Image (cartoon, rainbow, N blue to C red; front, side, top):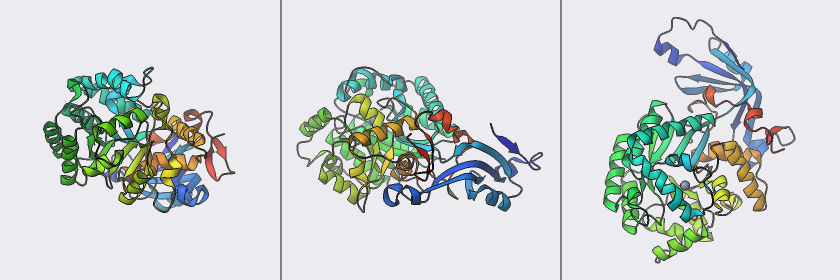
Length: 429
Ligand SMILES: [Zn+2]
């Protein structure tokens, strides 16, 4: 339940409505800094009676509700006393064509791809199927408070057109790309080094930077992209440096062993991507569970980011991501939180944060709730190079709409409750 009060909002033009200030009043959660670095108390900005003023599609003020209201006395006021108002969640790694294979039984990564993933993705060659799937995917995102994601489409350009058009029509801030894969996969989901390059280039021209869309050059992984295709993907990223690059890295031991056979000249898994110009700021590597010390140090040196996909890693049985190793030290590796649907078993970022906590427990440390929320918002935004636009409550960022305010008791019923002891509105009690 929320209350809305208006002052003189009748008879306004569309421009006046857009520039009109709206204040969301409720319990606000934002980050002043990175809790991994400075600790939860210094990093978290929780306000039990906060206000967020929005105008023209952007946040213009954040603070104590009474202060924000006093500064904008004519604003439209929406009050959500029982809700938490925060930035929308950002899912930094997810596959929209896989929505129908969530929780499919009984396989680990390589068999999973053949038995479930590729047949599901093959259906996205059909525009009507891709469109319907894209809208269902976006419905689920919104239902779970995810307002931005980095999305793998299928190998078919039509799957990208369908997804981007759907996201654009609903004003989502999304990164997306056509999966490039030219070997070790069925014909129905394969391209070639040349066609993958040309199709991706045309999609960049069509969608990159349009409204709130960003293109991500997307070679699936070093099993299904030949050296020639990886080279073409590297060239494409060099030609379009403001685009992102996303791929998979060191997810499952059997995959890593195969990659070693396929690319015998590389120093390690990350080294394959590096050799082909696919390592640097704006690169987003999914999973990255079984990393060597050299790989971690190259990630630190280059500013590339990782996507932690805990429900997927547990469900497919891939392994336990070492968040502590990634985030420690003076130059932590940027890490975002991701559902990896359909390998991941839930669209819920609350379930994903809970799984991240459980994985960290098994790795010998306890992920603080502040760290979990930071990963799912600011952390993911950093990996996607979108921290200046989304991921936090701060002036000039795009707003958190009222649709991403949560009744936290409903959203995370048993895992989340008030705690003053840790200086956070949440604990895992
Ligand atoms: Zn994935």
